[in-house]
Image (cartoon, rainbow, N blue to C red):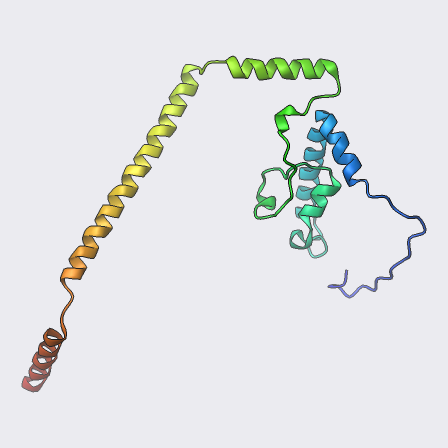
Length: 181
């Protein structure tokens, strides 16, 4: 609003506030459902803020994503383009160890984790992995080949460096050529 020169008056708070951040974080550590909802809410808020039609008022550059993450009780910032380069003091917690408060959902989650741990790769997944590994190997070979080529070029260029005497001879020959013309 200051950019648009709209007068702003600050009003005093009549009620004292309590820092609810630590309380929310403790609740999120106890219930995975709250964790998931807080992450979804954070992403929704940031995207809505970014795509708002009044972008001269709601500028993403001026938004403090770290403080906003604390306000949404996010334990670590979600991976999204808007949060790249933002330093966030993430809690040192294993995200997979946070249980659901609902026993049925927690049982289902534990069963799913066990199934993923014991599951073998399907032929399709194995093919994708081989293809990815082959692509990485190909990139590595290409990089090595380019490094060898650069070294060879450097050696060639070093061999072609002229001495001072040779440069003087070339300069004399060039001046003689100019005189003949």
